[in-house]
Image 1 (tube, rainbow, N blue to C red):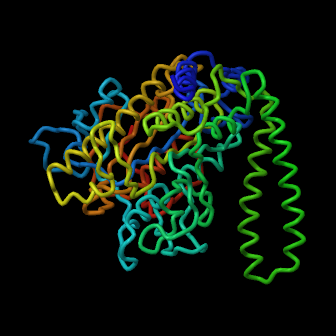
Image 2: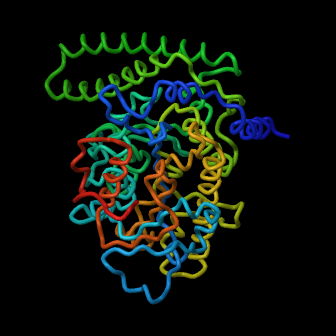
Image 3: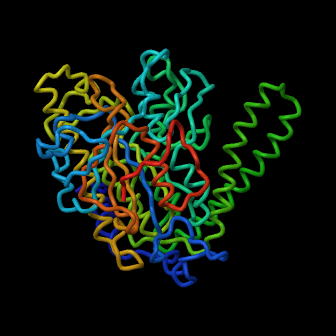
Length: 466
């Protein structure tokens, strides 16, 4: 048996068993229902448990014929807003056991992903608008410009509650430069989360690096010390960088000083994260082995990254996360399910039945992995006795609808979890076309994130989710 496979199996087996939960217990012990002013603490349920939010992205759109839930033909004429009992179609069958914690929502748009005067580049725009709702600048240079994503809006207000304000994961190494799609920078397709219009939050694709960032390096019992040492080393490096930058800034022209300021914004963000991590003395030390690195198969890789997200939520290391399953326009093949054609190539199906069937297989494969993740969240008891899934809001979707048409209206969108009792599942909700950011504002409200009147192209809150 390969060592990597053995390590992974041990990791997966142990991940759901013996977990250190110091942040959970101390939070409940000090009465998490209200802060010093008597106001509810953000990102906390009514029972005092952590409330979590995650966004999972699939590339290239889906086979819509197998995606949208079934409904009574008498309801085919869409009312302004109509909720149907959730009857899962083929792609969503892996979610059947958790149907009462699932909402499928139709009618959500990201219109700034359409070409307009900018022409081709739908894959770059699909990914970069999915959580921002803004029209990104068409450039393959360093002057990228997007918008602040919903996860980072939340992280700014609730990030201080956990060791990490947010967690960004992916299965492809991030890129921030180069021309990837018709004159658009690769940064738009390889980064889902944006801290500012010019600063993407680089996702981690290596499971080992992600684990060590969360819990420290080494074997169990060694990680807390290594974690503290790493923070000290990072702080020393940052001090050096900032001193050097101040000296350099005196010699630069106005345009170069602007570039330096943008760079230092990223440095200050790292420093802020270090300061936040230092406030939490008892770093969780999961009873599992550190992942060996990037697994040899995509299946193992996806499952391992989901397991890391599960660990991060279970140990209350963060309450905000994004997971880019594969970069937009990925041409990955799936030989383990008999699909040897590239995913992106298949998405230009021109209604070919064979290609559509293969896309449906890929969609089902991705949904099986998502379902497995939700099952783990549902099986894990939170500190209030409910499941972690009950105390979460997990978005799953794509910035492309039908990959053949490159449409960005009526996008695939699943909302899983009960939001600590604030959401009711088992529904297929059809609405008149609205910006997707309207529902994000509604989710921010439920997270206790205040004073966010608008996000991207939002026009208001989305009613009907309850």
